[in-house]
Length: 139
Image (cartoon, rainbow, N blue to C red; front, side, top):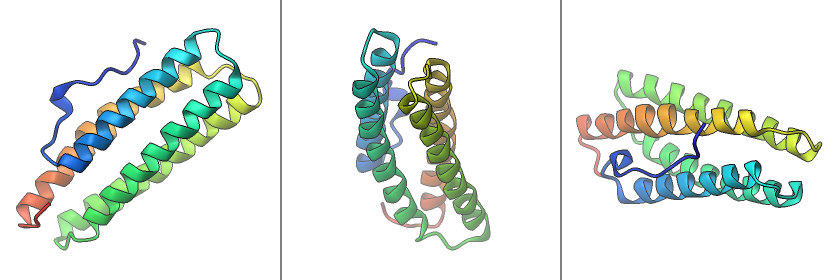
């Protein structure tokens, strides 16, 4: 899979979220590049840890926004979105553990990157913005 590349089509109109999304994609691309090069595992682990920190900040920021949602449809979205954040972080930690054992995790990283962009950044985060707008919640 080609490395993650930032696209302006990922912009959703929330400055902080858009900045975090770009940081996530750019740091993930650096991680993918290191994983496909002859890079020591320690360096790859460091890049993955940096990316995990970015993702945790991203998830916390979104979850703060979702705490303001009140309608049943919005609450259902919040529950699913938070559960996906948790599952995504567990998946990333499994990859980290594999790398720490010296295993190759290139395919798993590619899958994680595709999932990050397609499901979290595009589907769920666009839905979140729509729900905030629908409820009249400023962001």
